[in-house]
Length: 235
Image (cartoon, rainbow, N blue to C red; front, side, top):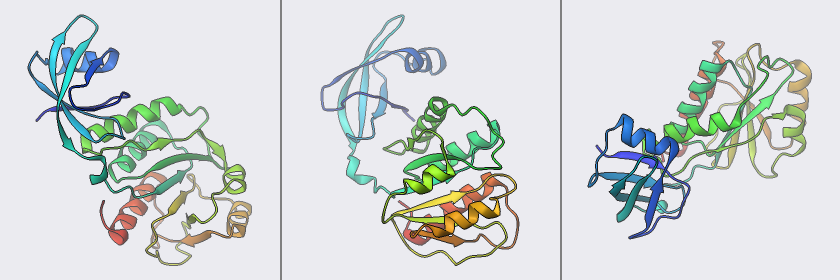
């Protein structure tokens, strides 16, 4: 199976692509790639392309694009946001990786009153999302947004986008089949009553539940995306 990498450059037939730094290290020192081998490249805009390695130097790998493997239009965007209260490192990594595999379009960390995680490295989150997209054969990478407070998220909410917020006590409506949605998952310990009240004032907000069991935050994130894909069709 060919190595698959995300790149931040235009992709078209006969285009020359130069890979450096992490991509160079991965190809040369991890995968032991050699001249003549094929590498699959995607950039989230131009589909997936096969590139043939033409030259390997100490700091660069030079490829030439030889064939379009998949069109960008083959990937149907789900237009689903996951808004979630940050959790500790390993669980955070899990959320980013699995949400990417499940096709989420936007990942939005949200700071609530019970959020205990301090510093959030959005750049690291982006790298994790890219790695997950490379491995699961997505043609795009989810947008990683800077953390915002719950108040700011609600005040700036996009009109017409349904916000499903998860009620850990098993209260709320069942899921409905909607495409332009966001799912809001609270922190360990759940939302405070005042937060639930404010979320409920948002016109596009709707409380939903995942059953009577109390789920961990990372479990809730993955469960709600799996349910969405089941209802709306796996993309």
